[in-house]
Amino acid sequence: MPQTERKPIPAEDLLLQSVDIWKNQWFILACGDYRTNEFNAMTVAWGSIGCMWEKPFVQIVVRPTRYTCQFTERYDSFTLNAFPRSYRKALQYMGTKSGRDSDKIREAGLSPVESEFIAAPGFSEAELVLECKKIYRDDIDPARFLDPSIDSNYSENDYHRIYFGEILGIFGTSQYQK
Image (cartoon, rainbow, N blue to C red; front, side, top):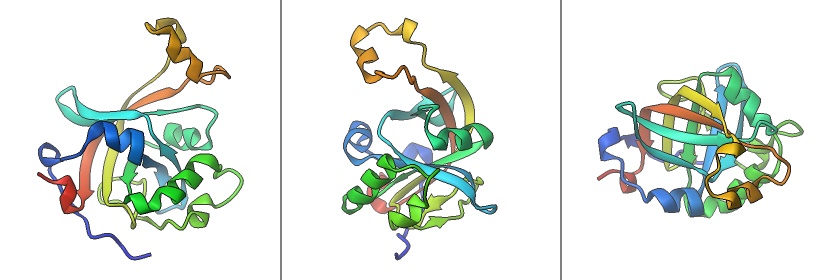
């Protein structure tokens, strides 16, 4: 696959439709170390992007039962990668198959590439890559749900682990820069 031409984007110039990109477009979360070839990736559709503790940040959630969670725990960085909508089938595949059992990244037709500032890989086909360093983690506690309907997302009691990542680098196509 050809590499998408991306340019650095200052955090204050990042332009995106924050609900749409999570709910309808999705991201690929990649965790691990590109240089040692010890990484995994999965589709994520729940999270946020903003400012926390005076730092540009993203918040992601990963169920501890997912294979990617062990990479998120072991390594201090991750990327969030947004793709053109033409990659929807690849993102669906990445969200339904486990990297524990196969090389799902290759099977999805995606090409990992080295990141600029962190160990975790990005993807050459991505039109937006957020390079992040973990700065906080916690586990969702269902006793703290103020809306009881949220619990219906956890029929197997596999509550997400929450990670905050400081955004160290943003690389994207012109549509993501104001």
